[in-house]
Image 1: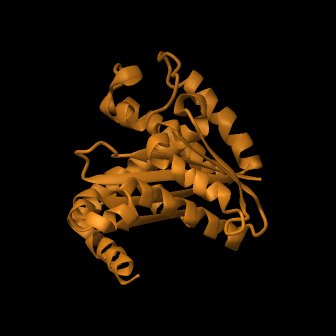
Image 2: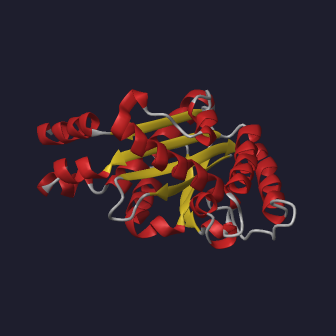
Amino acid sequence: MLGAFFDDSGTHSTSPVVAMGGLLGTDEQWDAFEPAWTKLLNEPLPGKPKLSQFHLSPCRASKGEFRDYSRIESDFLTAQFRRIILDTGLVTVAAAVNRAVWNELVIGEIADQLGSPEELCFFKCVETVINIVRVRKPGERIMMVVDEGTRDKLQWWTVLFNMQKQLYPELDRMFFAPVPKVVALQGADMIATETYQFSQAWIKEGERAVENPHFSEFRYRDLSTGLIFDRDQIAEIVARVQKS
């Protein structure tokens, strides 16, 4: 059995980008990931209290449980959590959409058919996971878990996927769970947040965009895959729907 866990980022209405990111791995990989992540939550840095969860955005901003962390401490802790993902060998999957362009081009009946940028991110992440499994682990079954906070927008998609086992025989089940209680979703949060932040730079700079050092190891590894839907890609999707 394989496990895939997904979280979102940038879903507030004023966000320039919507992103979703996640992690895919075997039972053995998750069995190694969970105790390592939990141990770091319980013993984050010398002199610091244990954490209820790791959430990258407040860690980077020194807010909430991280309010007493300096920038150096936040970066060091982030690097430690990142290293758990890398050392475990989990596959990272991500997708992002330029919200402003989406709102400009996806209107009227097209919007009714395509839905929201969050839905496109989710569909593309699921599609990517299934394609990876078909190539690298043919015949394996997948359990997919999604952040509970996305339920309102994505529940009908999970129902649809669960009902189409003839198209997606790899999919064992798909359900929602709360991030604080599922450490794998905290790892997914890291991928979603890093993708959200890098995608903003990509939309402005294109190929010249420079990722932050924490994201570079994810971006250039063979076990990572990501999609950014900017104007050209969104226009192509709209054109296909119009033709059909």
